[in-house]
Length: 439
Ligand code: ATP
Ligand code: MG
Ligand code: MG
Ligand code: MG
Image (cartoon, rainbow, N blue to C red; front, side, top):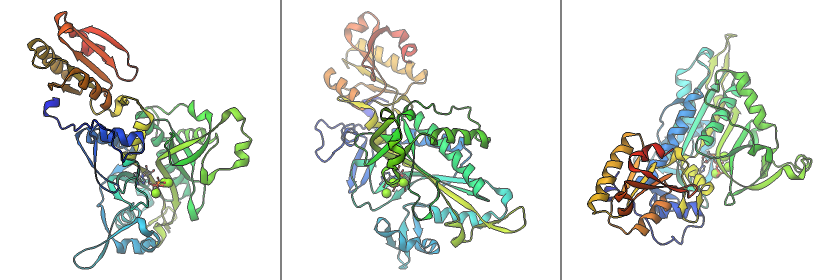
């Protein structure tokens, strides 16, 4: 992509309304545009990151056996009356009327709708387990939308829903999502810690929030430092092997970890002082087993091996891709801007022409642009006539993993300067070797 043909509205000034660094940097890097309270447009650079994050989420959901669908954003109130949640949900739900005066709503989540799909088709235990997910916009009329896409009113969510014959099956489904989440966040360069979370009035021990430690987090969390050293399951993890998956969950739920609501002072106090880690955290994912909460009132049942009907045992599993992007930036930036982990970077390389219009520099850049692209790198080529200082500042701000800098002096001796954004390390390389050196 040539920057002269791209849409990258970088802001020079720090926007005053942004209280936290990720919000400031997303606005300054031209990733998002605020359209109203808690409502954002995704501009080209932001959209590329959002797509990359969603793709990782999707790959890891699929790997764990979940199937992608897509449900509507607008739902009928009648469906929510079946579960009793139309009245219970409160003011976070945006309620709408259509032209026939029918009550509708903009979905804050999809348990009812997916249960309706399930009960319409699935009648036998032989068709289980089943896990359906989608990645779709949600609306929650938050009391205090703030921190940009971290807590917005309209936001993207991946929500998965599992259906099983009994608790044992549901627990295995829960474990698969648990492990899938560990892999998902690690692939984005994040250390997410699963913490016991409140299950609300239903109770039970099966709910975990996945928390990123960050000073700007909205909740207080408590965990054992051991989590920082645990290794995350690899690509070869066998999701069909319940014992293997259960073993991983056991390992990741044994050290102490809890959010404020679930915090147990006595258990915490029993840990050696040096192991205690008390910090602020950002909730990026939440998994939940709720059994028959929806299947019973909504009549979602299957015939079991005993020939009798059983209400299915369900769970739901959410990840917020839009919030995740803010969390990634909170975890990975410096005073000059964003530092993207490679897996979610909007482009891999910033190719900087220090003297656009100079025949030799243009020729070297054009050639490199072609070569790097052919070698599989996504390149953002700064071919504009801005001054070098401005180009360097923009490149640091948008945080692509590599900068390849072409100037008259280097070109004269056939060399490019390469800078690794994360470490700031710089080196020169012959033009013909640049592609090879970017790894
Ligand atoms: P929070 O405690 O931050 O309000 P929640 O517990 O209400 O979040 P869930 O219902 O568990 O959220 O939704 C699953 C995921 O959706 C969350 O873990 C988070 O990543 C994301 N999410 C929830 N609310 C928002 C929001 N207002 N803006 C952006 N992402 C959100
Ligand atoms: Mg909430
Ligand atoms: Mg929460
Ligand atoms: Mg939650």
